[in-house]
Length: 227
Image 1 (cartoon, rainbow, N blue to C red):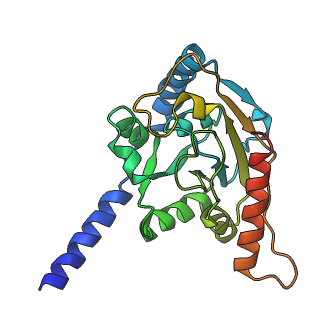
Image 2: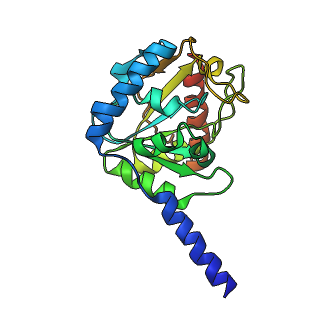
């Protein structure tokens, strides 16, 4: 009986984590993102570079280094597409950003264990022509801005969905909201660099695991090159 109850509770939690609370896309495009852009210009003098590389059609994954809780808001300012985010579940507990993350379409990801529901929904979203944002580091960078080791999840998802990856570099976020600081600083500059889209492919005789490792290393190298 207890095992059955635990199973039902687990399925209930999974359904709750998968629930999409995103507001209608027109609200995102005409209200939320313009507000984020205006606030970011005023408080952090945000600069967006390479926006011409953002795909205008078809599914793709946005993969970026992770420096602050504000990263998803900054990165998608110029993305005129519906986007869903795989974000660390703990970030949703932040009183300032938790609810807005849900409004923009974030799905909570529990880092300590697998999230088959989040993965399946992301795969379905990508195959339907949508965009998904993932931070391959899994958590925020170090206080000095150095990147952590990239996990292979973003590349594996892109390979399975058959979609390209848009590498993005955030520079300066560690000076705005470093680890251990409760609230972000203002008056510091943030730069977002959008690199050319990377199309993944397996080499002759290469298995999926080796391909994922190789492509993940290449992705990390591209993003790190602009730090």
